[in-house]
Image (cartoon, rainbow, N blue to C red):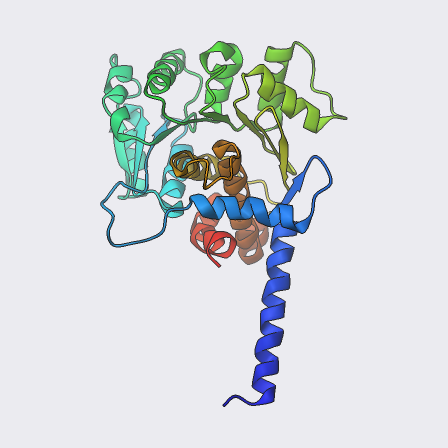
Length: 337
């Protein structure tokens, strides 16, 4: 039999954990309207609902085969961070389609990645297209650069991916391409755009012919999503604003004061996985909500939690690599406890 002191201590611990859970939820979520703690818990639960359980009965690749399109001589870190984060979140296989010069460098970062040195080849689109039936989602943009040949190849890969109905996450210089040719992705509701402030401003002005209204951030992200055909837009910033043209979610989960390079690549890599999971989970698991809205909120919260944990350990010296190391425990804290 346990003594009264032990029982009281356990009860106090349970209360503390429950309060801590509510604190994590409350600092992570808000709607563009009055909300309750129940609303916050609901969106977290929707993310949990789409996460496939770990079991020994599955085969390799079943929980996600993610393609990262990007990586050139100047930018090898970005596709690595996106691809390795996809694995850390729970994808089984991570492919990087990069230029020949970047391939050996990216491969040297980790033996876990499958690297294809094809992005600057004359038949790049065909080479990537051969792999599309095996991929569950593609992330286009990390380390892509603005070389005209690479952008043209990325355009062809986007078009082929749309034909296959594959979820597409577009980040970094992939967004530069979209700002120049919005019709390339406009109306494809299985796409998610992840612009930072400058990328968002560029897209907004290209689509709405007006500058961003700094007094109405929620309205701007809503209008951009609508103008793009109600595809999901994640405006990264002090708070992440997420919209599918019908509603706006605000992820204000505590991150850090550090703005080192690579953080957006972690977001796009994790989003590649969560978008696939949410997409195949079905409307019942997402309670009828847009699966890409659920995935985006999950990825934003996870990236911020990884950022927060890394900053607590390393402070000013924190880098994106430190954040990658925190993805597993951050995921567990948010979605598995």
